[in-house]
Amino acid sequence: MVVAENRRQERGRYLAGLRGFVNKIGDNLYRIKSASGNGIEYVVKSEQGKWVCECPDSIYRKQKCKHIFAAEFSIKLKEQVKKEIIISPVNIQDCLFCHSSYLKKFGVRHNKSGNIQRFICGSCNRTFSINLGFEKMKHNPQAVTSAIQLYFSGESLRNTQKSIRLLGVQVSHQTIYNWIEKYVHLMQKYVEKLKPNVGDIWRADELWLKVKGDMKYLFALMDDETRYLIAQEVADTKFIHEARNLFHKGKEAVSKTPARLITDGLPAYHDAFNKEFRTRKNPAEHISTIRLSGDMNNNKMERFNGEVRDREKVMRNLKKKDTPILDGYQIYHNFIREHQGLKNKTPAEMCGVMIEGDNKWKTLIENASRDFITDAS
Image (tube, rainbow, N blue to C red; front, side):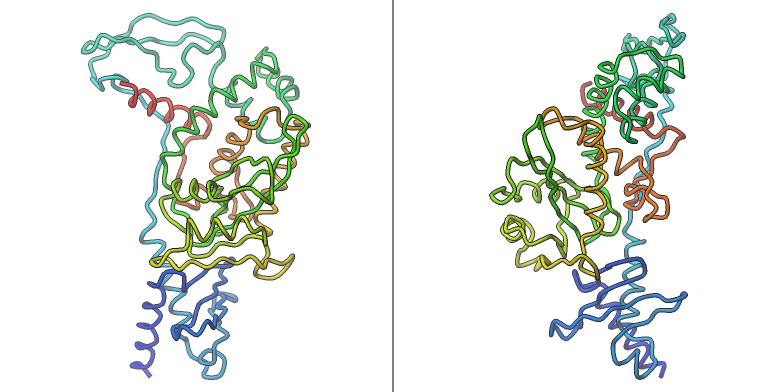
């Protein structure tokens, strides 16, 4: 008995190491391919803390089969390879430019939000303030980030303007849009350098929306396990759009390709999948026969489409194709918004990217600004 169980355990370890053989399709729910290569798949799920498989070994012999071992080893492997990226609030104790610790106070900057201490570096003789990311702003970081949070939570620009009046901030709705445009552009460059640890099953879907009154389509690519929005792009048409650019952007964003892609039957996905994801070394699988219910539905992508639709209704429609609003909502979806389906975690946290601090917007902006200064110097 012990020898037989050890043999099943080794086979399960072997299956877990094969790319595309262990596929997570839900919480504690896996679809595992047979090692014989005959195309048969077995569903393995956890019920009340106990693993159950639909293969004969598990059903008739009442044994812990190799497929259950494969699911357990797959979970352990993901925990071992997951590298945490911790983004902490910036605590500046040295020069922003040359990193010398020889700093002196160099006057005070006065503005409506209060006094900000300035410093001069004794090594490079350059001056700066410890207001990283919000230099030369008339309003404090709390007001700016509160406006960004309110807007991407669903408020219009004018409702956001009325809300931050309660903080004593008197600005126009155009100023709030300028803040969004400025900081989304800054944060987007920073988060593009992060490499989140997404899963092997990705989903893609398209959504029609209006851009300045004209109908366009938003194509999006999402990780199934973590709901991390990997890439998106706005297209003029749906049926003749080349989705290869979207898949290439996704591959570059996370430095990997999926073992399985789930889409609807749009031909553009099939052609782009064969060109970008399927190779001899990576015999990935494309599932385009999704249903409204069951294991092969696309409900997670439809949920994201609903989020975008809610945002678009408030705005009436988008004003331009390269709007910063979509990039900003991608940042909000991935790094700020907590999802009930992820046990109140963000997709970034599920991918091993941890943002510390009470104000995550401020933490992102500070780190993005420091990264920009480092690249420029």
